[in-house]
Length: 165
Image 1 (spheres, rainbow, N blue to C red):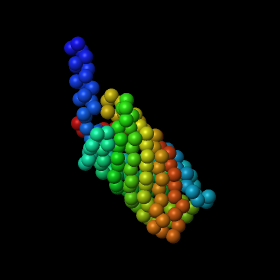
Image 2: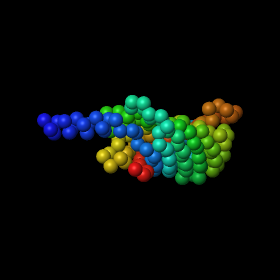
Image 3: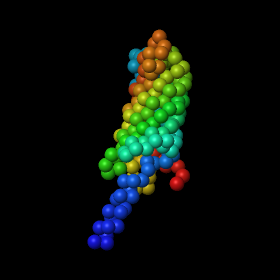
Image 4: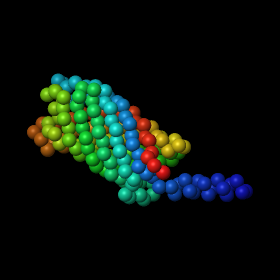
């Protein structure tokens, strides 16, 4: 009986725990540009996700920033909002929208403007030590704010590292 009460108390505490505080994600993946003349290639990314400013039930929202670089030399830096939905068994869904600045390495990789917006959705699994792994799908485009809007899609395997206590 005593073990059952302790187990129930631990489970209740775990469910009441707030979402992960600050974290950094390191990602490696592949980018596929929509333009035929573009150079597709490997992508390397680092995201910083701040402590949540909103938490309700399984949902949390926080500010974040990203820096992405393609092996071709293209670079994107953005800031925005990330939402996390905690699922059962330490699984989660992450979604973010981060507007920012894009610099292409060649005319073929031009996305239409320096202003681009990265949207991301990821499915991940958190481990007992607080770290997590996720598979993310993202899209960058200027949302038709420029005359041209070819866009780029990426798939990224990400490693989440919590910061601080």
